[in-house]
Length: 294
Image (cartoon, rainbow, N blue to C red):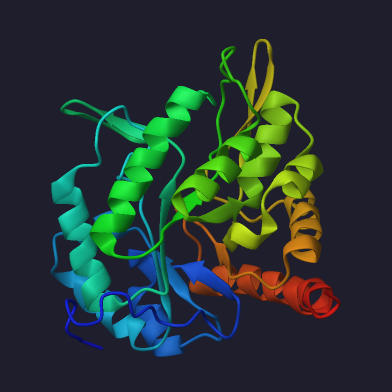
């Protein structure tokens, strides 16, 4: 698995043959090695592996079994400052060691000056913000020597100064920088409820040629004095209405690698594999047929 990173940094491993995968979490390190479930790939947050030790040991063992995607939460691509170079160095070390078939982060911000916030905060969708985001995407891609994916966020406020829709903003970032898109279908559903947008219009509006991965997760309903809000908590099964929206997305996008995210109240590995199997069934039924008909 080791290679010379300077000799062939642009050599990118092929996408998985089976599109549906799961997020690998510490609770399942031993289980995934012992059970070797029939999944297409695994995905981890690289920030959890910067320190080495036990986590890297198990990631290396799991990487021998499955293709890997690295999904970052700390690049803060939308910040009004350059991406942190030390963070990029640590991230690239993992890329060189584990050879992920793709790498990604979010259309959001989480750092300002010396402050690093434990949340993925939303951006105003303006030309000025778009320029800053694109600058950081380009810095990241130049440092890594390859394209990244950017994920659509979940959010709980909207800006009155928005100049374009979220999908137009993401499409334009991908067009300017050449990056690809990670389409989180649960986030689209959360946005549709919280902000009153049409989820299917969002999927129709996204540049299908740029989508390289889909995320699915469970969300939570929170009741407040002035109404209800959906929160992207990643701590429960995918909701039926999100599965329906996923089927619609797959019919348009084809058999895109799809990940089940589960970050809180983590169940047995078999539950995640079951969710992955359901995604694979939809891909086999809907996505492959749609792709073949093109």
